[in-house]
Length: 147
Image (cartoon, rainbow, N blue to C red; front, side):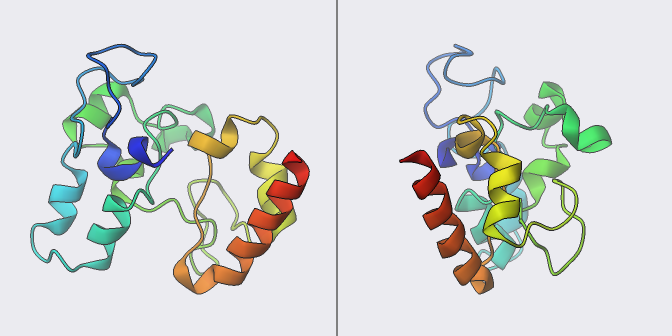
């Protein structure tokens, strides 16, 4: 999960074994995305969001559903992947997100990400701090489905 979303790095990388990291040659802590977001102001909100693992997982940046926004391994390694430079919000104030239309309800989240069990680990959007009630309701719904 988060070890592959934080700064688009591969914390649990074992050499260049694709079992542990799908993109060869990534840094264990920061592929440069956090450094870029934190250079001017280390207290910047984007800096903290990327470091906390709110961006897209490197297991997911090549996903075809992102269309032109999908990133090649070279783009991720080179610091040129837009998905690694932004939080993967479910609802960004009503604006379209990398996942398409905003996801605002627990049912929308589950319909989108609970299709395959592996989706919930690497392929999911995040709720903002201001969306705490949606996050809690979604977590309860997802856990009820997994039981």
